Structures are given as structure tokens and as C-alpha cells.
Length: 409
Image 1 (cartoon, one colour):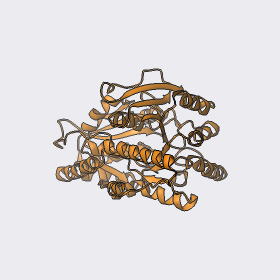
Image 2 (spheres, rainbow, N blue to C red):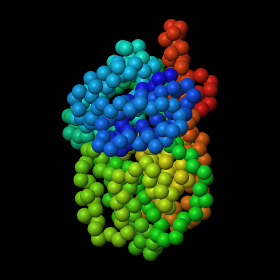
Image 3 (tube, helix red, strand yellow):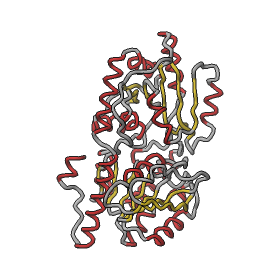
């Protein structure tokens, strides 16, 4: 199988970059995949393929840019030229831009591939029905929200023309099947990016690090975390360092710089900036607790899976998608009220001040991450591609769920 993967890819700053990296990293080791055609966005630096000495051939085709109106034409041209056996799209609604037209045009690509007769799977990380448009930084205007929801429903129908539409949360599958009468939606778990050897869960000397990781400024606001740690310091005198690892969301440029200025008086507050893939393990391993300072959610959390991989305790907002993910995949953490710094301070303190509890959470999350490694997830995608090819060659209806897949999900 010559597999085309359409995704943002490091050193890109576009959304889902990290997930794209790990898809490629693990697909290249699947025995059925003989070549990966990486159809990705243009970046100044070279693409991170440091693992390329192992696995199948990887051919990079940089052809699109965020908010480029011609992305759909450029990507379609590459697909026509390279003629892959199958295509996987790594998507969310603002994948190709935060402007309406380029974002919408990009989501028509699964339909184009379907019309070409290419086996196509679209992995959709969020659905508009579950996105808080105000908190996500898209629009606070109620009329515009209605317009976005109408447009989003239309675009969802385009993405549903894929042979298989994969989602990572069961609630999404239920909504799509009920609202759109879809019968080609598959629940495929997010998966853990890495499964390193089990850590010893001990903390190093020096201050205990409270870390948040991601792209900040829309529904991910770090002010509440900074103020919560200040409360803990005042209450307990605990030696704590605050680490903000990551960059601004594309929708909120300059956000972290403004936070840095606002809290310049706060001691032991560190902003790492962009974290390269090779530095991600260090950032997680040095942390005592990983905090999710979210006011809403837009899908399954890659950061939660990463935290689990490194055996970290987590403090989570009591919000729908995260609560479902914890219940379905076996993660565990301290929940807090996303509107209350006092609640977050209590959650962080419960982890930091009680080593046995912190270690219990870390071990639970490590086991959850190890139960769904990316190697198994990419094999599941390969199985679906094979099922699509079989159905096309025989004319039979595609059966999305075999007993083997039921057991895994």
C-alpha cells in the first residue's frame, strides 16, 4: 500500500502537527505500507524525519499553506500526480485555515478523493456540534454562530463522503449517526504517542514543576493556573515552578507575550516557547503535574495521552469531552471547576502535597496510555483500508466493525 497522509507536520505550527508526526512515525512500520506520501504544509525548516532510517520510504510533498485559497487545487494535483493506493486525512474544522473559505475548501478534499475512487479515511478530531465557538476564539456573535453551524453541517456532509470517517470519542460517533444518518463512522481511539519504559515516578531535586502544554489563548488560558499556583505558595510555602510549554494559538497571536508581561512579578514562571519533538519527553519528565487550563474542549486530548505515556498525574477541568475520555480510556486525574482558581489550586495541591496519590495517578495514566499504543491504532487504520479495498473489489457493503475491532475499541 502506497499511503498518502494529508496533515500538518513539524516544524509546522498548524494544528494537529504533533499528531501528524506520530501517525507517520508509526505508519512507516506497518508491514502493509510500502511508501508514505506525506502531503504537508510548507515550512521554512526541513521536515522532522529523524526516524526515517527505519520502516518504509517516506516521500515529502510540501504543497499547501494555512489560509491559502488554492490549497484544495494544490493537494488534489499532488494526489493525482502521485496516485496513492489510499489517502488518510488528519483533520479538524480549522485545519486549512481560520478564514471561512480556505477552511471550507480544504474540507472538500475527501469528496474529491472519493470521486477519484481512492480508498479514503478522514480522521476528524472535532465536530462542530461539540465546539464552543465563543471559547474557541471563532466568534461570539450569536448570528454568526448560527451561520457557522449551518456551514459546519454542510462541511460535515462533505467529510462524511469519505469511505470511513474516524472519530476518537464515542459521543461524536453517536451524534454523527443520529444527526446525519451516517453509517460509515468508526470509533478509533486517539492512542498514546509513545510508550517509554515505565518511569520510577520520583521527582528530581529542586522546585516541583507544574506544567501546561499546548497552543494557548483561545479556550486554553494559563492565567488561572498561574494564579492557582500563587495561592498554593501562599497557603503552604511549597517550592513550585510554573512552566508554560508551547506557543500561541493561531487565532490569538501575542497572547503569551501579554501574559508574560502581566505576570512579570511572579517568581519561577517560565515560558519555553515552541517545543521541538525531541524536547517533548524532557518537558514532561521534569514535571510533577500536568495541568489542563481549558474553558472548553474541542476533541480528544493529545496532551493527556502524552502525560499518560510519561506516567504523570494530571489536573483536569470537569468538562464533557475530557470526562468522557477519562471514563472510556482509563485515565485518572484531579478534576476542578474551570472557572475557579481556588478549585484548581485545591486540585494541584492534592497532587503535589501527597506523593503516594501523585504516584497512584501517574501509574494509572501510564497503564491507560500503554493499553492503546499508536502502533495498534495505525494497524487499525490499515485494517480499515484493507476492508475498503475489499469492498470496492467485490462490490460488498463495507462492514466497519469486526469482532477484533470491537475488542480493541
